[in-house]
Image 1 (cartoon, rainbow, N blue to C red):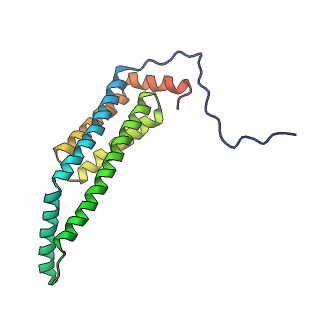
Image 2: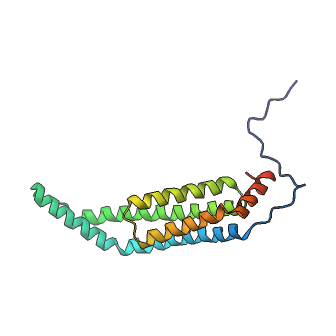
Image 3: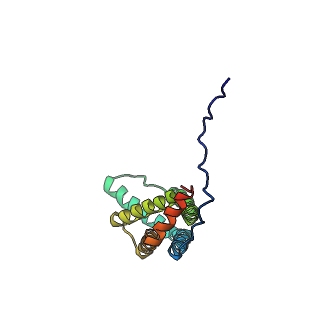
Length: 173
């Protein structure tokens, strides 16, 4: 009697006969640059919270102006606008924290030689760089994009490519 095949694929075996790859300085600097990008994301939260009053005041002004133009007799209450702005700001803060955690996690995987993490970080850099052209990006956003591009360039240097190739040949994906 034959046994049923295992439905889950097995993880590739690490070839211990090959020497452990030496992590180049570019990969280490790239890792710390990604950590800095995550830190800048977290610093963004107090900046968003500081702009809460400005955000709600602008929304109220626009609503009042729109209500006058539309001929509405009952524009939104200021409490409703502040409540809505609070929800939006809370969601933005949660998303920013999740992005910062994701940057650090992918950077740790990249530091360990995982090529897929390097590809994800490159993809995130492309998305942020392209979106910065469409969004009204200030100096803060451009500094994050610039740091991401710097970290990405370090990840694709020849010594970094050699490191990731060696990690792949040892069985690390």
